[in-house]
Image 1 (cartoon, rainbow, N blue to C red):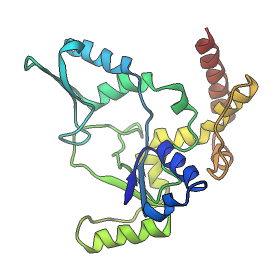
Image 2 (cartoon, rainbow, N blue to C red):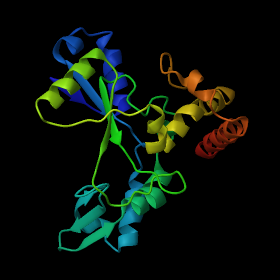
Image 3 (tube, helix red, strand yellow):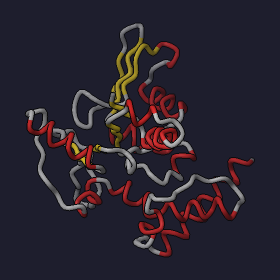
Length: 234
């Protein structure tokens, strides 16, 4: 079978495999994606309020889709529908509600999966993605021999087509992920300073990534994380 999950799910599965041989025996392919983090329910509630929709009447809620990136869409039992662009729903609401654990994630890019996929965003004039509705395209990163073999087989079967790209282009497509990776060490240092538990980051190249962050960036994230910890305690 194949397993598809968030990067943290994949990490948990890899850890389980060290204790239970059935994992690797039965799961031959592990896929993940670049994860922006899991927002709280409060974020969805604020989106619904902005749409003018009663949360108790919601029959379905779609974060995105039916396009690229697609809109957030809420539908009620009474037939009312509300829509919001991805740039607004994620940028103005959900990204501000991401849980603390996700902000200190050392591997939001599926580093231990066989294949990790992401939105191959187009950059805007500012160098940051525009999130305009366009023809969709995906970034595919193979991270193991099995993943590479599967991708080549899928391409040979006509299931998809790919074009190679330079690694540095990923930073332009996913600038927030690049920033998170290089700054997570500073955030973890804040956990150490406040005697908080933290995830094991061995093998995830956190220290290497941090070398490309400026001292100012690191200090800002170190102090910001300490502030979050103090606020949570209160």
